Length: 215
Image (tube, rainbow, N blue to C red; front, side):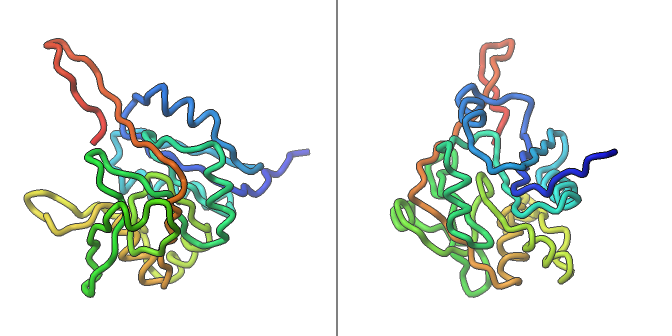
């Protein structure tokens, strides 16, 4: 008799940017508490990030999870982060974290639907509804993706930005926020009370310079 796989409460999706992660991230990842049953799905490069996210979502939806959690492989989170995000009982909930130069990865949308940065101090330590976020660690009710597919807002991720050919284009996470969440009528809840960290990996090459493997 074959055993049917239980419906996951969480599908944890990790689009890896490279083959390397830091020890700090691995310690965080191994401590992260997830409600059972859960499933963890990985996609490693060289897939572009939008294709990686789209592929992961399609695969996750085959198991009909309750929630989808995106986690970048350079975010450092407290072990109870997932339970904290679940406690809000809201369709799209994100942590607050800084990018590599210290800016908050959180945005308001102007009248044209374009993301504009929100100062760190306006969100840090608070709960806030915003227009867009980075997808470093974000919990999304799986029904959001099902509704997006039903409404023809698919695929949900598209990387449009190019510094030369399309400098006004969106990154794949901004695209989701502006072209999926916004059109479905879901503001994004940010919990700025969760302490987070953002690290990067590097490798020493022959001439002793450091090559950064993640943007």
